[in-house]
Image 1: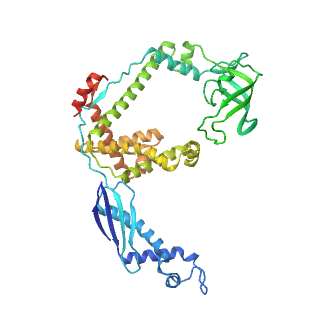
Image 2: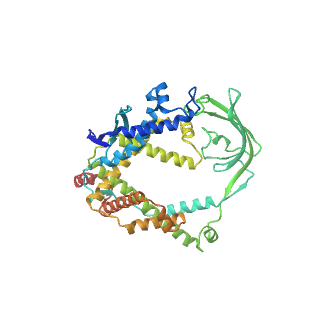
Image 3: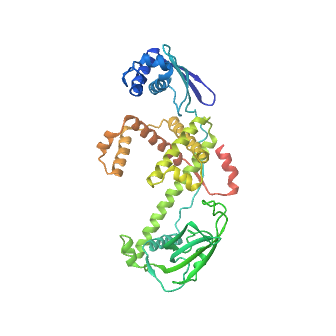
Length: 442
């Protein structure tokens, strides 16, 4: 097999691959063996028709497609390795020659990992973020805990905002009940805006046993097109009014929701954890800002095929996450009114950003000669094992060498991030400093 490499514009390359006629003959024979059980010719038992007889009756081309697929699956990975290119996309294959007795020739157009010319990455200026935790934030977090530990009780009074109204309802458009507009014993939180228009507002002030006509208008952009933009009346019966009863804010509450004996100790711990969370959020925000600035000052020519490959990867990742929630991509598209092409276009900017970030950080790691030891990989495997409740040596046995190399690359990238962040300059956001900040980055 021979492989010729032609470099194209915008970090694309074309591999021209020639596979010997002897391998094509073996592939044709494999294609015949794959199909022969389904071939029937008078005078022969099914599955016993000789290949030359089949080719005589139907033409030699009858096995070409399967033979080509067999050879492509074998030859492209070999060509990939032989080319020495850092290929970052799926190939676009074109069969040039496929004829019995002659070499099989095909081309594969691929994207090649771009070279990166880095801009300034040491001493990047980022916005200083205040991570101070206020008493109001602590109180808000404690209130969230009180809400989570509340109990629901029935009340004999009119509906108020924040209550839960247990209702039966049926919707009508032009005095005709519509599909999907009926429910019984539904627990509706007033003020949650889970029902359309002013539905919930019109129940405020009503009491258990009341029958209420709720007048609403469906949004112009509504999933049920036959209802979009139309006025409707819901016949509502209020069966019960419930409210949340919050626990008293005292030492007993602190003991119930934490390991602390007093409310003061609990609040101090809440403040500490909020501070840790704000510090982590601030670091992520500053990382994003620093890397975005480095990307902006760096130069790289990213081929469209590389972006397409990343888009497909991100969509597959999204589909996998949906599946864990019991949803398919088809259902998601239906619920959101999204098309496959529109979704790909929506994902594309994030795919480009992810590629740029990865390329820049890899280049920093390369330029700074950042190395990753086997011990660091073992430590990472140990963290993974602890997360999955496995023995580290057992997990290590499952991990292939290629996966270990990928882990090394990820660790090196994280080291590059740490290097950048260890050398950032923080400045408060102020108009008077924007000019010198710009000058500093140049």
